[in-house]
Length: 237
Image (cartoon, rainbow, N blue to C red; front, side):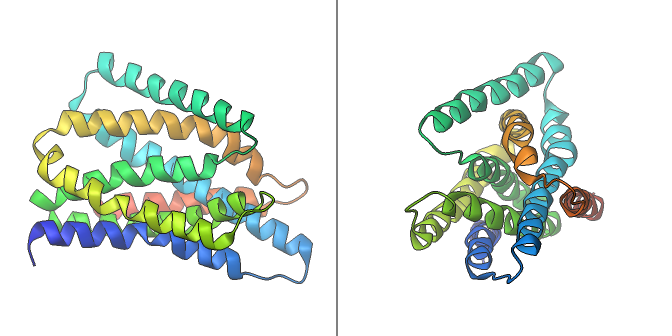
């Protein structure tokens, strides 16, 4: 198997966690609605913690390695401002979609990094693919529930959408393999920009959505999600 083929397979594997999370969200059933509410919010918070770990441990530190402060900070701010505009337009259209956007902003740059890493660090790329898969699973679960909550939304169409989004992973891995492996500053810029967008969506939409009055499981879920990212970064590092 060629390194390129391997990169594409790993990226597809990591991306398919999104529709798998959607299937789990579609099939879960709780008789007690209070327990179901707390569980769903805890999973949303877990995904938020994983996203925060991606910002703090991967996207910002790795992205800024080959950038000056004069480039990195404007790119980070531009990411936040861009997704402020996008989120505002989505709200006017009657839906959020913030969880899907955040999931993509996390997945696509990391898929590019996966393709770039496979050129020089194949073992690290394998671990990164496993970590992306574990992050995408709860994010896919929460994003599916978010979209499914809209009246008249078909769960089958959401799953097909998630499969299509997963197919972007190999495309991004190919870009990383052919282009960004020799352009670390460009890859870093993409990661920093995505980090700004995720941070905006995290505090504007995801964290408030995860809160349940009188329940502590969502906050603990966020800690566990961050711990997942921390464990992955320490193993990869």
